Length: 388
Ligand SMILES: [Zn+2]
Image (tube, rainbow, N blue to C red; front, top):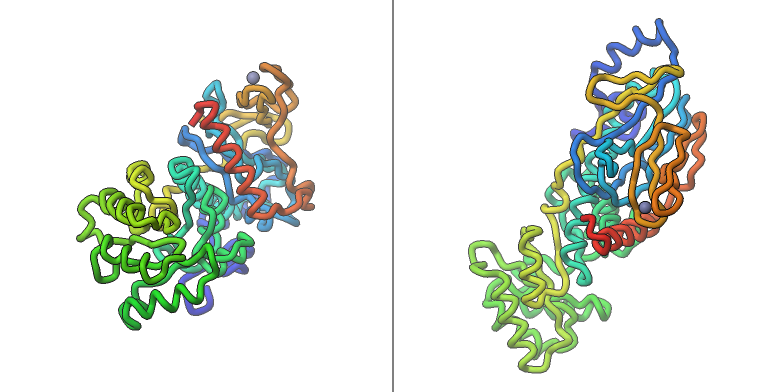
C-alpha cells in the first residue's frame, strides 16, 4: 500500500491486492493443475427487492481478462429470488477460473455496497415521491468512495447529490444550501443575504435554525427575502420535540401571510419512517444523509455452478448455467437452465445482457441519468403492480 491515506488505490485493485489472501495463496496450485473453464454466478442470499448497481466498475476490472460476462443491467429493480423462490443470478461469468478468482473480493465489493446504497435510496424515493430528495451522506463515509456513494444514491432516486466528484460522475450540478458555520461566522442575516444574492433562482435555500426559533426565523426570512425558494430546517435533535409539528406550524404561518412560494426543506438524520409524517406536514424537499450512505450491503456471493460441461455446485447452490427471463406482460421473473424458453401471459424474454465477450467489452457504458431513469421507472411500476 502506498500513498498518504488508508485506501487501496485503483492500481492496487487491478493488481489483486485489495483481495482476501486465500485466493492468491491457492491460485498457483489451481493454475498448475487445471486451467478448466468454469461458469460462476453471483446471487444474493437475502430475499428482498433490490436496486442493482455496481456492475460498471466490475466490467472495468474484468475487461481484458480471459472471460465472458452476462449480467442484469444497473438500475434494475427486482427481487433477489424469482417467483418460484430460486436465487436470481445477477451476473454470470464464464471462462478460465484462475483469470478471475483473485478478483472475487473486489468484484463483490463493487456490487454489494453500491446495490445496498441504491436499494436504500430507492426506498426513500418511493416514500418521498412525488416530492424530491438529495443525497447528503458522503461526510459519514470514507472520502475515497464518495463518488460511488453519490452515484448509487442518484440512481436509486435522489434528484441531486452534494459531492463535487459525485456531481461529476452523475453529470449533475452538485446540490448544496448553506452550512451553519457561515451563519455563525458572518452572522445569520449577512449569511442569508450572501446566499440569497449568490444562488440562482430555484435554488435560493436559506438555513433557518442556527440560533432562533424556526417559526420566527421563517417569517423573518419571508419578509426580508420574499423570493426565497426553500427554507431549510435542520433542527438539532435536542430541540426537535416533534419535527413534523415544527414543519406544520412553519407552513401554516407562511401560508397565512401569503408566502406559499417559500417551500420547506428538511434534513438532519432523517429516517425512512419519518418521511410520511414530514411530507404530510408540508416538507417538500428532503436532504438524506447517513440513512442512505450507510446502507446495509446486499449479500452477494459468487459460486461456481459448472466446470467444463458438467453442472456442479456446493450444497445450497443451484448448479448449471442459467438465464433470467421476464414476462413481457406481467413482469413475472423466472430463473431457467440456459437455453430453456418459457411462456407466461406473453413471451418471456431474457433480462441479462452480454457485457464482456472473450475479454472484450461488448456493452456501452450508460450515463448515470439513463440508469436512474430505468431505476425510477421500474420502482414506480413495481408499486403500481404492488410488488414492493
Ligand atoms: Zn406473465
